[in-house]
Structure formats: C-alpha cells, structure tokens
Image (spheres, rainbow, N blue to C red):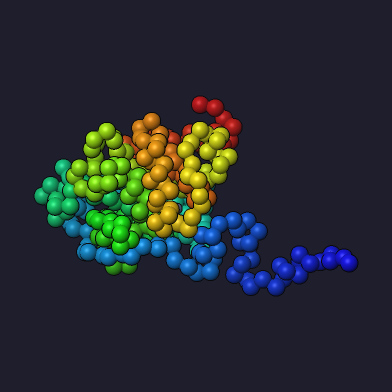
Length: 276
Ligand SMILES: [Zn+2]
C-alpha cells in the first residue's frame, strides 16, 4: 500500500495558527506560545511607580541607555529572534547598587535589579520614558512572585526575571537579595546580564567551550531557574561569562554592558568561523 500524499494532506488539515511554525518547532515553550500561553509564569506584584528621583538618577539613565543600544545591536545580529507570539526572544538586566540609590525612595531596598519589560516588539529601542525598564525590588522564590516598580501598570517584568536575578543577585550563599549580594564572600558578582534565544544547543556549547545545563524546561519556571543556578554556581564569574540554558538561549554577564556584549560578539564571530 502506498501513501504518496500523506504528508501534504496532514499539512492541509492543520489549523492556520500553526502554519509556518510546526516545521521547526522544537520546544514545549514554542508550542505554548503558539497556543497563546503566557510568557510570564510567575506571579507579579506591582508595588508602585518608578520614583522621579530614580528616573533622574544618572546611574540608572546611563546604564539603561547603554543596554538599549546593546539590545538594538543584538536584534540586528539575529540574537533575539521573533517568537510565535510576535515579540522578540531576549532581554537584559543590570543592577543599581545601594550607593547610587542614596536619597531616593529606593534607598531602603539596597541593591535593585533593573530588567527590560516583558514582550519587546521588534525594531524598538527600549527607553525609560516608554516604560521599557522595570525595577525589581523583590523576588520570593517560595511563592514564585516578583515585586516591581514600573512607569505604568501596563508593564510587567520580563518573563526571564528569575534567571536574570540568579545571574546578578544570587551569590551562591542563599542570601541573594540586598546589600550583601555584591562581592559577598568568595563570589564576585557581575552587574549586567544579556540574554538571547540563540546558542542554545550542545553543539554551540561544545564549539565555544561554554557550560550548558542538562535539561530543557519550560521557560520562566522554577526548573528553568534551578538549571541556570546550577551553572552559575558550578562555573562562577569571572572565570566563566557565558552560560547556555539548553533549548532556551545564552546568558552573557559582565561588570559592564560592554563586557557582556563583547562575550556575545565573540560567539557571533566563532559562529561565522572567524577567529579573534
Ligand atoms: Zn528567554
């Protein structure tokens, strides 16, 4: 018995929403987004507006500007592909340490984590005024809840906030949050993290000598976080500066935006077979 047109008949019966995605669909996450499932899988609690004194803070403005440029560059380089929900796959974060928050309403929080908002449209340069940066002031791991400040109630922190938190605020001592997080004990903590949905395979890790997590998971889940934490704890900064979450993407860290970006530029050059 011959079934010559079996494949094409199946394709014709697919609902239109799947068209174009199924052929290269590999992860549960892509299936979830295609079905209209949520990116952000933790609870969010907005505790207020970003205070005026913080919006005017030179440290915050300077780092947000550098990170915005970096995201534009990453998108152009193909490191932040458009996902099935029509928004790009990639985000970034930096920390603002307590000495830069003196005399602002955030003084009492100690070090805070600034992340890009959830759901970046393609070809858009993030800006503070347009609400593209969100300030995370707390992460409750047990409750799987993020407390944050934003320009308006419309914004949520990026779905990868727990992972960015792990990369920049978790010092491997279990005391992650607050003033003690930076340079605590033996761990030097990086201050900038850049994440893109690229370089997520065993082959990518092998080619570039990068640590990779063992399992694929849904993104934005406790399992996703644990997998990245195991990497950052086993391969601490600054000896290691790029981590691969299998089936998800890369996390590049540095003390500055430039350092985190240089790691990615090096990966891109290696990917093209160039040296240096
Ligand atoms: Zn991601």
